[in-house]
Length: 592
Image 1 (tube, rainbow, N blue to C red):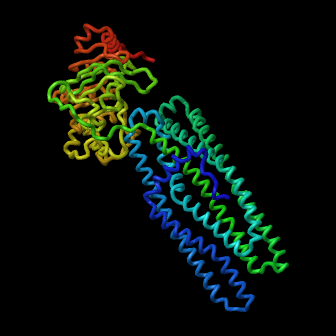
Image 2 (cartoon, rainbow, N blue to C red):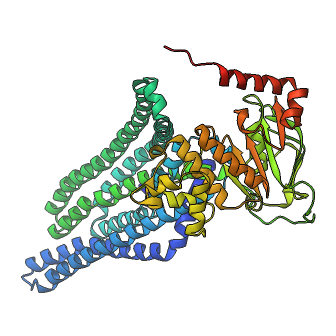
Image 3 (cartoon, rainbow, N blue to C red):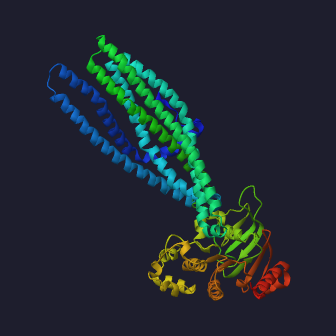
């Protein structure tokens, strides 16, 4: 029968996904029970209506009063309306709560995933799982489950009352339902596969579109609008193709169900008329039976629609469950066995080797580096030398394959990532801004900063006058597109300085600044280095010539270290980098 349709095949894949659906439904069992009760009450009212109609017809035949049966019919109508409205509101509210909890859970999980695990996925695809897939999950965890139960109760109740009225006509009806149910069962796995593939391509579409919008300037300059649009449209067409396949199969399934009911009605009408003419059945019973036969379409349709909805929700649950496979960062407090040292280097890397995947070549190899408590340490080298990887290790975005890192003499393994990062500030290479106002961005690392501290940080990066000139000042809303690259970098630096960190890490933090502003920023960095540690990565060596220590990386290894004058005298690669800088600074631009 239709009720026994398998939800997904094979069971080995189905059960984990069902557990995901159950995990979001379980906290709302009380509300689900209330919704089920209302649904059953509505089903009872619906099942009673044909029998009361038979009562009306029998009263007419016996010339009895119609007040009783008509009053009951009106009462059933009112009960049905109240139950329908109440269940709709209840399940709608519950559905939104399920979506809210699912999104909160997924967002918290995503933000706790390791950086390499996150960057291995397209952001748009992850966003789709939080937005679109949770909507599909809502129906699976709430209304579709109750719909299946209500539909099953209505189907069983209808068939039972039909049996009470006439067993012969029931046999005809059941035979048709069994045939339709068998065909329906065969179609369900194909519908589930098509829905899952459609959702997968929607996620890919989101990833490609998000990347295109992020690089929109490059897209336009490259005149790649049509090519990218075609690529995105190809994903959309593939998704639509799978969705259309699912819709067609759903249409076949629904048509089979409808045709089965219509066929049973025709057979019931013909055989029933013959039984009435043979005095084997009275007219009122035939009419009541026909009403049940007409109503039989409702529970069968409800079952088929809810099975389809549950299939889509389970497919979405599978995509949501994939987020559990992303490696989370360590959040449990570590067992500390090593006391912190108040003297010596604040950070140490001892024999550290690391890479971005188990099957990839190491990005850095056998790194031994001691970073002092005060002073400016610069890391330089050709592109791909491993400079940013070193900062990722220090910030614990990346775990070493070999060797170990220490903070104040304490191994990183005894500290959580949060404990390490609480002592540091970081300015990323592309200096991203967070949604909100300029003030929101400044307060991002130090929510309790005062107005005076905010203005002081802006003054240090020469942004105070520019911000003061805006109509809304620091409360001006902004986005990445509303700021120049230099302004973004200065806001990011001010945001890092507000925190007053023990270790300030800057990855190409002044690459987009003009000469005067860059000089002011470096004065600020020197002032910070006098009291704490400043570590900078630079491609433009002019920005780090006065660093206390310069570390030269090549091929993922430390090639040399020392002051500018020491390296200039002793290291050929450093001299080559400096010579390239001099050529760039002294060669005049060609006139076109």
